[in-house]
Length: 292
Image (cartoon, rainbow, N blue to C red):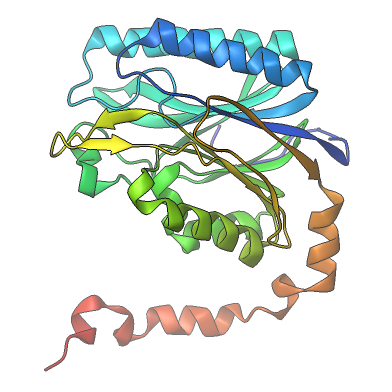
């Protein structure tokens, strides 16, 4: 399911969420599935209704994506869906998807065992050569779930505010962001998660991995801090992870979304006609901004 998906869901006003940060081992699907299952069961025992896993949680990135790896990722997704049903949770985490000879970085929204929405990463991270093996998606998604109205981005996507703004217009309450964001730009991750929450008056649940892995482009070692982060619609930090594996638990109170949007009526005060004129003007083209 793509785009704006409306379903008959009535989430509770407040509940617990969990970011399941762990060291995603490249190509080690069975080990990654075991880590994810352990974290999900721990999160459920603590009372979580919503859980977010890291980007490409079952496989991580690779320089090539052989059929055996794609098949293993598909099996891992099936296992995750069964766990979503067994644990009665909403679970989101991106993984590999193969379709018509192309490979995508796809996040499914699983609601109590049912795949209710699917999102393919729109912005591929060229500095790490993601575009060499993966195909970019073209469609954002917002979906009603038993944990609220959820929008999905994947890692690098969060640097593009236009994409998040669309989710705001679709009345998303929670933005979930599976990620593999390295330590060298950890300050950017913190600032961007906070900014997207404040400017769009929604909860942002960003799950970042731990551990280390070689870059696809340079073979340099990348270190991941596991600083998973949950920020509320007022920009307040609800929970933050450190470098340790395990669930990062955070309270979600959807009433804060309604309260903040009522107190600070951004949607009502915006000026879409002016914005359209700005984007349509000749100065919006990069070529027109070049200095003679």
